Figure (tube, rainbow, N blue to C red):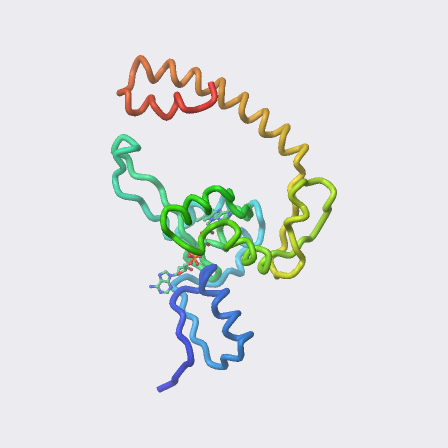
Length: 197
Ligand SMILES: Cc1cc2nc3c(=O)[nH]c(=O)nc-3n(C[C@H](O)[C@H](O)[C@H](O)COP(=O)(O)OP(=O)(O)OC[C@H]3O[C@@H](n4cnc5c(N)ncnc54)[C@H](O)[C@@H]3O)c2cc1C
């Protein structure tokens, strides 16, 4: 019987990174098991292919959540990658570190080591800046050490898009809030009222 130094179940985002790190650290025999098939597919290689793979059972487990009281008892759709690369092969390729205060909240709730200053060095280890540094006030936070290619976002364009999005949300929210108030139970109206009307 063959033997291995390490067996990894699931060749998704985490599984592939672990395999790659183990190889870099000198492990010779690694078994990486994956339930899905090859990622050599047209709609996986094409960034916009996300729209197709979102509901393709050949590459997507297409799970359904349990009925959710917060959704008036409905089930949410939970896509998950069933393919080499896992959900990372069918995702939207958006990269954000997350909000610093969220990490700090987790640390303050009793999780030492999860504050933003604790996790930031790991983001920096993973990231490699690939383009303009002059367009974002956050550009200096990106380093060039890691293998993940990231670019600073264009804050000016982001501000325009955010302003347009807020205006659209406000208009939809006020219409929804009026419709909700007349037709739906108060619990369902509540989220609408939290939007910037
Ligand atoms: C549609 C979609 C869009 C997303 N967009 C973004 C985005 O834009 N930005 C972002 O940061 N994140 C995004 N995500 C989330 C991100 O892709 C996931 O959080 C991340 O890939 C999860 O990594 P993972 O290793 O935990 O799991 P996965 O990458 O899902 O890997 C799990 C792997 O295990 C395999 N597996 C399961 N059971 C078995 C078994 N019994 N035997 C063998 N193999 C098994 C699965 O087939 C899968 O390949 C998105 C996710 C989805 C589904």
